[in-house]
Amino acid sequence: MKQEIIKIAKDNLADIVGFASADSFDKNDPIFKIYPATKTVIALAFRVLRGTYRGTEEGTTYYQYTTMAVENMEETIMPMAQLRVANLIESKGYIAVPQRRHQQIMAEENSTNPEVAYDAIYRNKTAENQMNFSDAAVKCGIGEKGLSGAVLTDAFGPMVRYCFILTDLEIEPDEVKKAHLCDNCGKCVKACPGNAISEKGEVDPWQCAIYYNGANGTKNPFMPPEAFVSFDNRLEIIAGEAKVTPETAKKILDDIFFYPPAQHAYQCSICGRACDTACYIHLEEKGVLNKKFNRPFRTREEWKFNIEDFK
Ligand code: SF4
Ligand code: SF4
Image 1 (cartoon, rainbow, N blue to C red):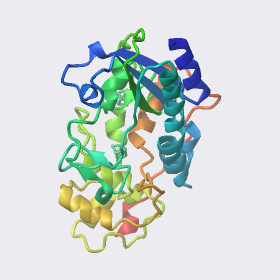
Image 2: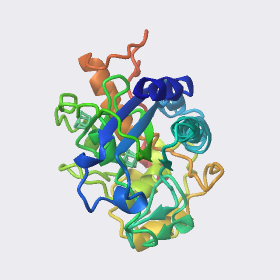
Image 3: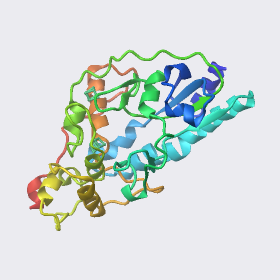
């Protein structure tokens, strides 16, 4: 049955399939509130195409990442694979409970998700019923957690997205991966255009949200010179040096309208997940990723506009 699940998942574009016994989760883990009879957690991980980061890397087109690496993955590709695997499990008389990240629901009261519009999020609604996705991915053997919190995989580094199926079917678990990719180089921290990641790897979600959406004008080809004219600290914002609170972040986000959002409330990523890209480049340069490409990801020096252009 395990091999049948792996085959159908891979036939439907999953790249990595991992299994964890429910015994490896704390008895208070949300998986047992979602489905108390859970015996196995199945993780399906999908590569994010390297080509979808090209537009940001070149400073040209940006919607490919958001539409093809976020929106279509989350709304089409991943649910299809989940449903196919779930149908197989249920055809054998077991229950399959698909778990995909709901981008617009979060447990915290005063946090946000940079990938969607902050005012489209329902907060503190299902605090007990959200799986911890990255922890579950590690338990299922998909990869290890890097400093930035991203799950790093042997093949694609942090360039993956993942979802789960909870089932009462007992399946032999996979081994948790021994951490060997993240070397604490700090490149993810340095690469963020808004200093949203602390040295210890903690991500400030509001800081991330404004710079994910393009508040750093030196890394945003669409920002007009007069951007944020009503803000006293507009040059700090544009240079990526402003420290925001949830309130100031909302005001800044309301003022970012330089590039169209995608559908389903997904916001266009102007930072292009620079933290993940820097990590990927680092791992590729070290030669530790087992999915090889004919060309390195970064082929020339990183571009940047001059802050003087906004004065
Ligand atoms: S960039 Fe370096 S420190 Fe950050 S997650 Fe990757 S390997 Fe770890
Ligand atoms: S690089 Fe982008 S996604 Fe990563 S922490 Fe910074 S703003 Fe957020």
